[in-house]
Length: 338
Image 1: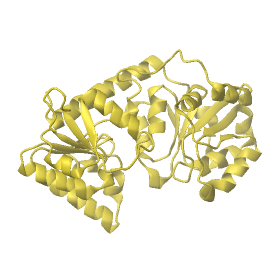
Image 2: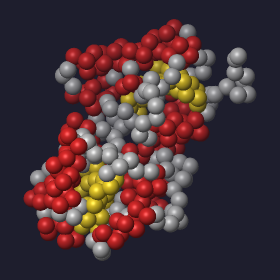
Image 3: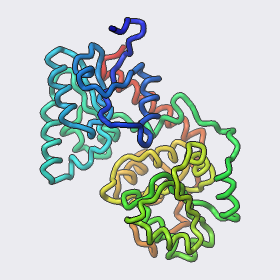
Image 4: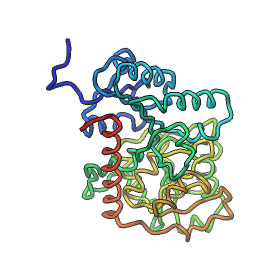
C-alpha cells in the first residue's frame, strides 16, 4: 500500500541502529515533530524513497550511507546524513578511519548530498574536508525548542535525597552511564583525594557503572561519602540530578572527545560544566561563552572556587531556542524542504 500525499512523511530517516538506547528515541521523536519525518530500518525503503532521506547516524554504517548517496544522486533525489563523532575522522590514523574519511570525501561533492556534523566548523575547521555543513547537536537545544522545560516541576525523591546528603554543600552531579570514557575515574579520584573539596562540595551520580573498569574507584568514592545511585535512572531522576546540581560533570576521556547529551542538558539549563582541558567541549564553552571550568585530571590542581555560578536560565533557554531555529532551518535547507 502506498502512502497518500496527505499522510506521507516529508522526510525518511534511515536508522541502522537496533533499539532505542540513550537519547535516540527522543532524537527521532524531535525530528518527527520538527521536520515531519518517519523512521525506517530498511535500507531498501530508504534507497527508493521519493522523499528526501536523512541518515540519522552515519557512524552506524558508512557503507550504507555511501550507497544511499550514490544511488539516490543517480535518481536526482536528496540525501543528508549526520555525523555524531567527526573528530576521530580528523585525527584517526587507523585504516578503518582513513577509509571512512575517504568515502565521505568521495560523496561530498555529489549533487543533492549533504554530510553534516553536529559541531560547528569553527571548533574544528578540518571537518570541512569531509562534511558539507553542520547543525548544532540537537541535545544542545531540544529541551527548549519548542520550550519544553517544566520550570515548576516539584523536586522528586532523588533531589530530596541529594539535598539531605549535601547538608548545605554545593553539588557536582554526574549523569548516566559511568565508565572510563565518561571520566568516572577522574570524578571519583578527585572527590576521594581532596578532603578540602569534600567540606564544601558533594559529588553525586546516577547511572549504571562498568564495574570491571572503575569498580575500585567506585568503592573509594563511596568510602569518603560520595553519593552513588548505581542503577538505570528514570527521566524524572535525571531531572532531579540536574535540579539539585550546582555544576555538571562533563570531563570525559580523550577517546570520548565529542558532543555530549549530559553537557547539552546542562548548558540548556544554564548550569556550569566541568570539562576536560583541551577537549572539544572546552572549545565549545570558550566559543559560546558557556559557564565552565576546565580540569586537567590532576586532583591537586583543581580549584573548586573557579566553578562559576549558573547562568540566567531564561538566557540559556533563549540561546537554546536560537540554536534550534538555526539548526532546523539549515537541516530543512539541506533536505530541500520549503
